[in-house]
Image 1 (spheres, rainbow, N blue to C red):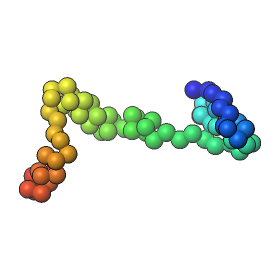
Image 2 (spheres, rainbow, N blue to C red):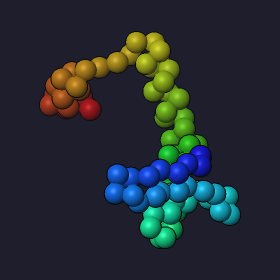
Image 3 (tube, helix red, strand yellow):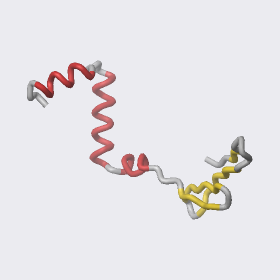
Length: 77
């Protein structure tokens, strides 16, 4: 995604692609945008865990925080 923002103090932030990577420039300094989500999406084990969680949610297999804390206290998890 490419964009350009101007902060209230006049600072301009530009985003751009370079060598297939995303960067932003703030006051002449270049910063690479790092997204750890990309790493998770490419990890097969994590992807399978996410898919299993999504399936559980669709089937209504959800627990409140309180239920989870109590299960931990009982040593069930």
